[in-house]
Structure formats: structure tokens, C-alpha cells
Image 1 (cartoon, one colour):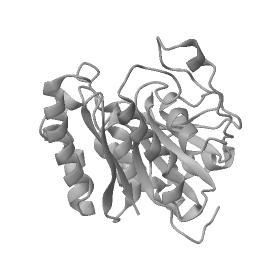
Image 2 (image 1 turned 30 degrees about the vertical axis):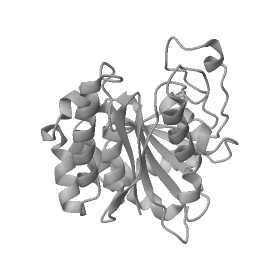
Image 3 (image 1 turned 90 degrees about the vertical axis):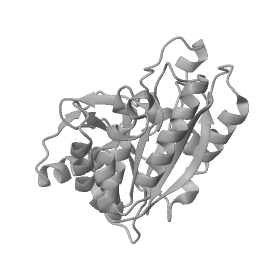
Length: 268
């Protein structure tokens, strides 16, 4: 694959469960703001992508593992929602070609990888992308996180994948800048999320050497472990920052969900 322009990279919040497509009793203003941002995602690209590579918070393996199926099903990996949320459809094609390229790039960087031909699109992928590409016309491949959740490892994975940006591939990290299930709706958590988000915005928009050092040491940030008791929802941002190279990031959206602060980022 080749392209005449370089694609940006982006870290987006995917919200909770099937939130855009069922009634969840949440603040409609919050949900509308996030949904509008996600629907506008294709408009930030310099041209239509040839494919999407998605790193979702909801897939972890012993080594980075790439989805290789030609027609991945949906993986309804959420619980307790209305019946219609388990009948959603989003028939985006996979891309075995892109999956092979991902593994080759990782191997070239000395990073062992795996593949999974049966894996479906989890809700960290299909929920936000069903808003952004409702016609499911763009091939999509998921790449897992690596167990252990080492931020430096995920920055290195992103650096290895950076050439895809010159091949028409839009690399998307799907997670949340706040993810403490006991904190949503808690007034104290709102204050903590705001402090952490301010730190994350400063780190995410810093020059590359500073950005990468700060993201590697994210656990020392204000309220870090109260914001992310477990960091799987933050790690997709590390992959995206790694793929960004020397590009300077910018905050593309800020908002709230159940009162806590969230933010989205783009590089390039």
C-alpha cells in the first residue's frame, strides 16, 4: 500500500457499552457532544483512508495480536444492556493484507506478534466507528494490547507501526482518558478527573521526547491511579503517541461522561 499524503493518528473515547444506540438514562447533552465528535472523525482526514487499524482497550494478549479475518463478526463484550444492543450490525470488512503488513512491521522492530482469524470487533471498535463510518465501507483491523500494560512497550509498538500512516492507514486508539467504574457520577472523581486530564493534555501536546517520557511515567501524574485503577483504557493512547513520531499533538475534543472529564487527541 502507498499514499500521497500522511494520515494523522488519533486517540478517541469510546464511551460505555453501546451508549449511542440504546437508552441508558444518561445526560443526553453529554452523549450528543461525544457522538457528534465521533461522527465528524472522517472529516479530519486529508483523504479517505484505505483502511483503519484500531487499538482497543478491550483486547489484551500475551503479545500484540492482529485480527486477520476477512469478515470479522461483532463481539458483544458488554453485559446487562437492552436486547436490541445485541442485535446491532456493522459489517465492516477486515483486511488480511493489512494484518500481514502490521506483523511485518512489528517483526522488523524486533517485536514478536500473533494473529487471530476468529476475533470479532469488540465494542471499543464497532461502537465509535459505527458512528464515524456508518456504512462500514472501510476495511478495519484490530490490534491487541500486550499484557503487562507497559507504557514503554506500547510506545514502541506505535513507533513500529508509523510507516502505515504513509500507506493510507488511519491508526486509531480507542479507550478513555478516565476509566474508574466506581468514579463515574462521583463529585470527588470529577475533580480528580479534571486534574488528571489537565496533566494528560499537557503531556499529550508536548514535544515528542518530553511527551513520551511523561506518558511512560503516567502513573506519577495527579490522581493517576484514581483515574485509572487499571490502565488498559489509557494504553491505546501510548500506541498512538508512538506512531505520531515527532508530530505535535493537539486536543481535538473535551467533554464529560457522567460528570467526569474526557479528552481526545490527534497527531498530524
